[in-house]
Amino acid sequence: MDIAELREKILKQDRRALARAITLVESGRADHRQMASDLLESLRSETSQAMRIGLSGTPGVGKSTFIESFGMYLTGQGKRVAVLAVDPSSARTGGSILGDKTRMERLSRDKNAFIRPSPSQTHLGGVARRTREAVALCEAAGFDIILIETVGVGQSETVVSEMSDLFLLLLAPAGGDELQGVKRGIMEIADLILVNKADGDLKATATRTCADYAGALRLLRKRPQDPREFPKAMTVSALEEHGLEKAWSEMCTLSDWRKAEGHWDTRRASQAQFWFHEELRQGVLVQLETAQAQAEIQENLAKVATLQMAPERAAAEVLSALNIQTNLKTRK
Ligand code: GDP
Figure 1: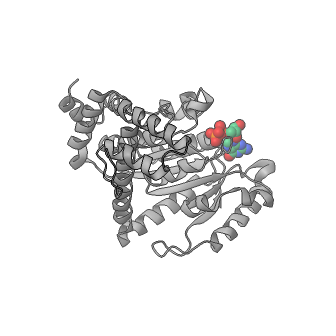
Figure 2: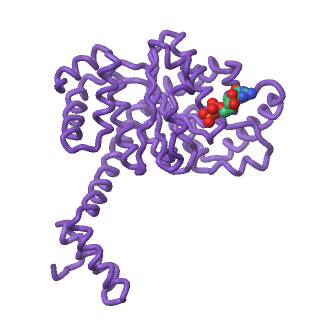
Figure 3: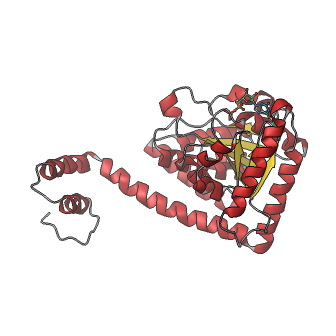
């Protein structure tokens, strides 16, 4: 299938074409990369705006259960929902938990839902670009809501929040001690904290945990761009499907506000700038992996290791061999 045909089919919301296009953006082959880039460029002007929702939480907190119930709730509201994942651990754990499609069995059978397991990649930068491009493809294919899931392992939250309009943090009911286990940085990027499993025996603990987090959120820096009551903490039960409607209404309140105040577009624009810088950085890193660079690096590394050459000079020489200017003059 050529790019023009793929483009037309994606715009007609053809799911198989969408899946093929995502496979294309995930491919590492140079010709595929070129095609993927051409395809994305051709879709740029067409892209309708979806609500991109990032979702993070440690394994076992109930992410897949939540995505399934919340996704079913949304499709029940007539929305088309795509689920993507950024899973930096997939290479390490082998069989990725996020890659397991059977986790969301009901949702995966829903014709208004599209679930894409995460690509297995070792390199977070690579995963990030592919997911970002998959998001753009899903938007072009007319999905209203794109859920981008990640496990809570630090850096991946930042990556996901930089491609999301809203960011949800899913937490489990827990004693007060564990409150400190959630890194401040993650609390700061969360728009909505959902304390899951607020059902049965866990309900009272969940309510307490929620109050603890609400207190912690109040101590964080104020966000002038958001209504005063955000970020918020609330309880849900993904299993019993409680609180989903309320969670959705909070997300709508926040996104409506940001749209009305112009913060929605500002956020997307600053994200685009973030990714531009990331791509530059990645581009340089790729240059460092070439055989020529590696030979140069090894040669200079040996000199650094035996203290014959200063580290900054050794680095400047390698960079200059790659035609990257530094402010050091080198002999090469
Ligand atoms: P993930 O690893 O974050 O994707 O978590 P899962 O969705 O696989 O859920 C982990 C476990 O928690 C499973 O046994 C779920 O049945 C259970 N679970 C998920 N959501 C809830 C909930 O709302 N209430 C209760 N009681 N259990 C839940």
